[in-house]
Image (tube, rainbow, N blue to C red; front, side, top):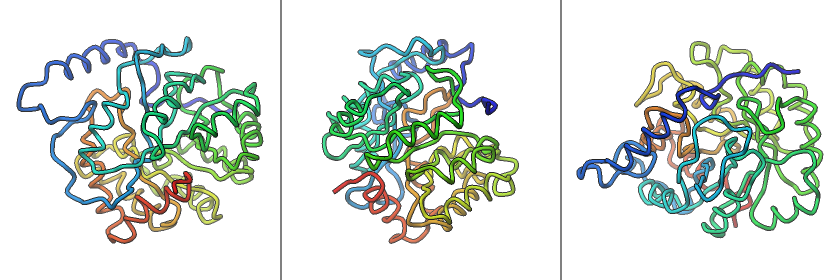
Length: 320
């Protein structure tokens, strides 16, 4: 069995206190912070302009209308819902979005699919399912905007430990639909998984810059493994989660930036950008506008950046 790695979303004793503090902070913002967007620091617009149909390819929708999965012991559910995210969209200038079911909900995809329904044709879903999901259920979710599944090796899941065998089983299950498989795993786990990942019958999407250790970055063995998969032509990378992959920190995230620039240069036609809003489990919320501005350094050319924000998401997620 693959070793289960800890991440920012791993259960912490202070999770409940953090949630209460976050809620209090949102409620008690001073008047001069009225323009701040929910679950995001900062108030200014991005320095870079985004093209029409720009897509944020990684967010989570949560609502107190839906309880957390019984397995979940981390940060409680807060209302980071569609209404809240529309404020983020207005600030960033993006118009398309990909909603990913968070570990908080286990295999309950109702918040994600309801969110996609509210967003309309400009949204797609990446869902989380267990082995017993039926073909009929998958087809129903496809009709509601689902285009892929997420298989998480990094945080507690409702089924317990995630194994390579489960990953392959689920990939075979969704392959007939033309879906992709998105994985969340640390660099060490990616190294262990490379033979499996390379033979999946679906396109592969890797979350959050492959979670390479900040002190190693492109020298970590997972970097070479990911590059081999990118060179194979069926793997995609999410240029997201800079704040998860840094020791140097904001605003430049220099260590994460070195990794992101290399991945973007290696496969410019198969990288997409995501904010990871609402930044679950983060004590200090990042500034989403500044996260978007990182693309100016990661992908300096305007035309190439438009590809990352518009053309690549359209190809991967099926936007018209």
